[in-house]
Every structure is written in C-alpha cells, then in structure tokens.
Length: 194
Image 1 (cartoon, rainbow, N blue to C red):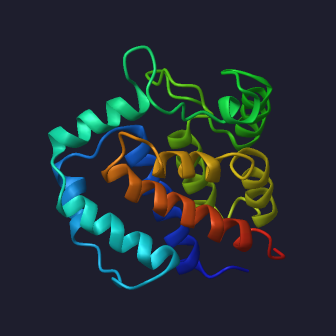
Image 2: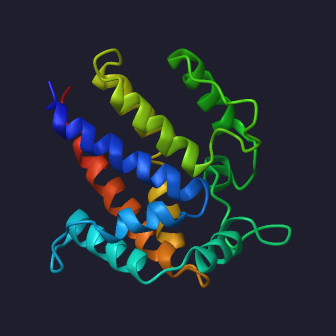
C-alpha cells in the first residue's frame, strides 16, 4: 500500500496542473506559487518547483492571460492543441476520447454541463488523476496505473515538451517543466507493483 502523504502530494500536483491548464492563474494562485519552498539547485521535481516559483514571482495576471490565450485559444486556434485525441491520432474527438469516456463512466466521472471542452483536455485529465488518486481507498492502484497508461502516458509528456518549447510560452515553460517532470515520475511510480 502506498503512503497517504505520498498519494496526497501526487494528487496536489495533478490538481495544480489542472488549474493552470484550465485557465490562466489569478492573483491568489500567483501569490501562492511565488511562496513555494524549493531547492534552487534541485533536479527533477525540485528544480521544476523552483522554476515555477521564479516564474510566478515575475509574472502579472494580465501578461499570463495574454500568454494563456496565445498558447491554448488564439484566433481560430492557439499555438498548442491540448487534447489527447489530437496528440494520439492527429484529430479531435477521435477514438481515444471514446475510450476515455468509457473509463470515466466506470469511475462515475462525467463532464460538467457548463464545460465545453472534451474530456481529453490536458487539464481535465490532470483533474481526473487528482480525483482518482484522492480516492485511493476506493479505487485500486491497478486502476490508477491503467488509467495513466491508457490516457496520459501515450501523449502528455510530449504535450509538456511542446509547451516548454512553445514560442509564446514564458510562465508556461515552468508549468511545462513541472508537468514533464511529473510524467517522468509517474511513469516510474505507476510501473511499481500495486
């Protein structure tokens, strides 16, 4: 059995990524990120946390709103398309989304009526992982592993690499690094026996 504090940390990181990928951060989120305690010379997740802290401390809400829209919304389309189907097949609303919806239904998770984005949006998948991990007492670790393996592992690290290298990314380079480091951690962590 995995340690509860370890699981809570994983759920929290997924929750933060979900928040930052769903919308640009507001003043409260920026202030909290600027207070992160992280090692400046750290590698892996520690280095990513430090980079995010520095990025938050030097950002403004207005600039982040512009950056977010250029990256993910744009006029017609943003610089990146943050959907699993797009990354896995080159098309939106393709078979990976159908399989995802089936798995979500098994968990009892449904898209909220006011949400217009398909469930394979990077933010929605991070939020789903946070929910699944947070309900570890009800959801077996093997189901966490299968969900990650089927719906995040095939594409999300590449998405974070693309975000890290995006022309219009500044603050979101730090978000991307945290996401990429989390995907690397999760690929190893979720490969362990239950």
